[in-house]
Length: 323
Image (cartoon, rainbow, N blue to C red; front, top):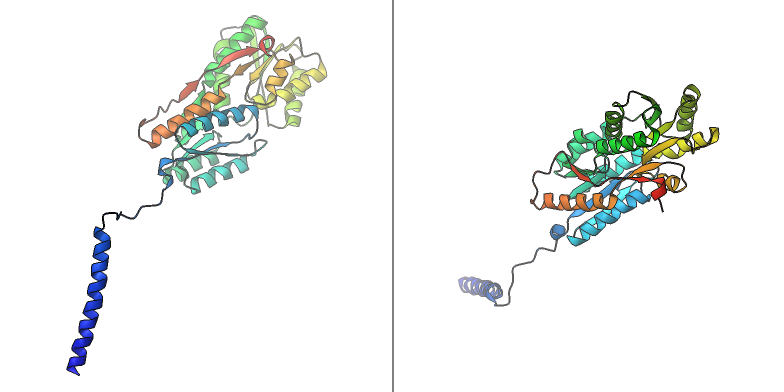
């Protein structure tokens, strides 16, 4: 019995010795390599650009600039958004991007409490940097802003208006009732120039964004101010309805009308001579710079980014310059 046990133990030891030797051979073979971690996206940052206005000329150009810059760095860039300024859908996309743990989010600023909450708390809790582009929301704790100096854009329009109209007249400033930061900056810039002209009277029209509401606000203003000579739309999306109502009541030509280029309608109106001038921005540059800064941040090359933002070029384009 004892002899059987000894034989059995010897056999077990021989088997164990064989497998130990085989494993040791594999470890010390010349062609053996440590197990490779599957390639992650560490060499390719996952970025997303989110806008409220998909498939518009302005935002298509922002996206093109962002894609071009992302490709240079081997980063993956997706473009998400909503149509027709659907704020709820836009915020859902932003929340999805945060929960998807994107490496970086570049987003059109939306000056609402819901947007600020998502950026300040949810994105921050995941450690995801956020850069606002085109429209800023500085108190959202975004890393930085890339886009036009909206205050200077307002000043540029006001200078042109004073040159075209002269030093006397009534000017209507049309705005939406959202009180967005970019809109307030434009209006502050306009006021900073026109307050030097005591003969120019400023009147304010505030409306919600629908065409019917813009038309109703314009009807009320023009009924009460028949001597108005000029109009400035601080929100470019209001321009088409504003011009429609002016044209319905009288000829558009005698009026001085100005706006901005971040609506698909304004360039068409400019080409048709229905508005006198627009502030032309640099959307491709916005896309390129915001993407480059995001990658610089992720790679630790630019920390911190300038909280005051990075301003892109603006220029005034007049009707006679439109192709």
